[in-house]
Length: 138
Image (cartoon, rainbow, N blue to C red; front, side, top):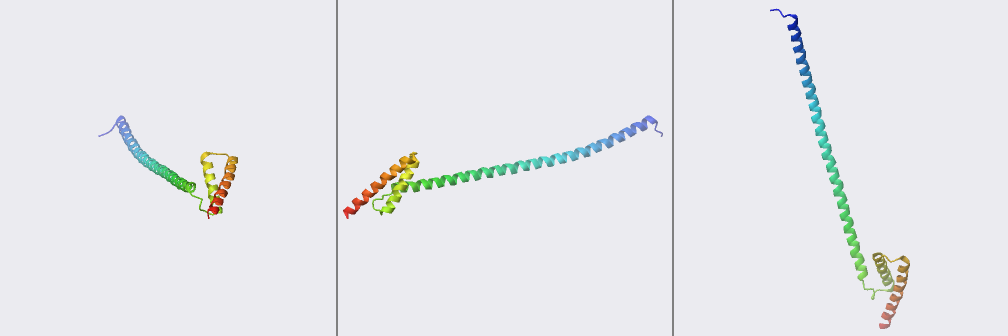
């Protein structure tokens, strides 16, 4: 059986087309593999980025919570100073705590520093008066 020229040419074209399909199929497999790997890498990168964002958010929230607790403790401490009875203290301690009370009250009310100095000066006179009265009772 002899093949004529047209049959040979058709055979060669089919052979060439089969090789091309095989090559395209292997190229597509490689492209699919690379695409899959890139998608997995992108997904992994997104997950790591999300985890990092969550960590940063949690750290910021924890820091804010610690600062709030510190502020609450400081406020409680300042409230204790304000509520202290200085009438039975020595002059030095009473002066110190009355001055601290005045500073705390000044910060809370926003009084200017010159007014604060005047209040502090008046408090010294009040403390001196209290101490004199306490000594007279003895």
